Image 1 (cartoon, rainbow, N blue to C red):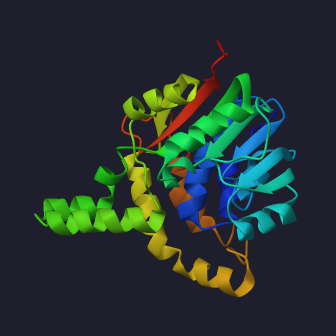
Image 2: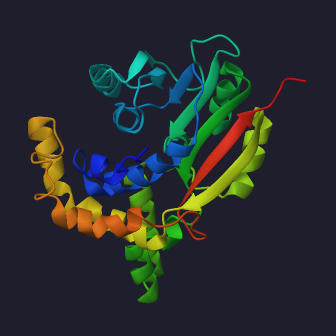
Image 3: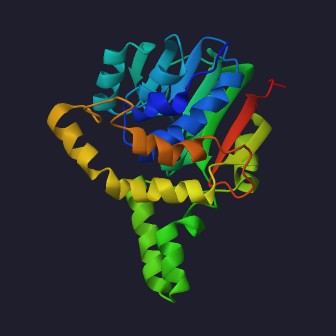
Length: 265
């Protein structure tokens, strides 16, 4: 079976600074089997799940109304649920799998959310998620340039600014994540870094180059007005090499985790 071209599926529906990273992450799910019922923790508007999976997931959970309305319109979840991650309206040991794609870095107080995720998962259930890591801020290209020019305070200000617009609260290494997960009731089976510093630079500059797409989104509710290869040829040519990067990337700025709910003793 031919695997999906996740890059093209993302580029034709969202700005490349978002689509490139999501496409790289989407490829990892090609080799992961999720047994239902499946929980998508922090599902947002459901775009990622709608592109990656060929069938609706069981539950999409998010605390915000507007994204859930979009997710419901995509019919990507059998049950969209508005709730906080630390207070899920499900009984113990309800789900066989859970995913959370680039969400947990936005949560200031992680421990209650991880404990609640463990509660609603059956013993032995998979918990698959990805987050930016400790390599992210040091490799922001503008900040690195400012550092080289000796403008370290300005570089630090830029890093704080970027983290604020990206809503980053946790940019942690596996050495921090693994004991955090173990405390919540998980065992980490595998993890790997991905998305090289060079790929991050493409993503970083894309925030500026994609401003026209933001205007289009505001005016038409669509990111891309002409989702055709002739229109996106240059964008695809620039991003394709980074999509094709091998994983793992030793200095990758994001980390993908495959964990499992520990059996109750």
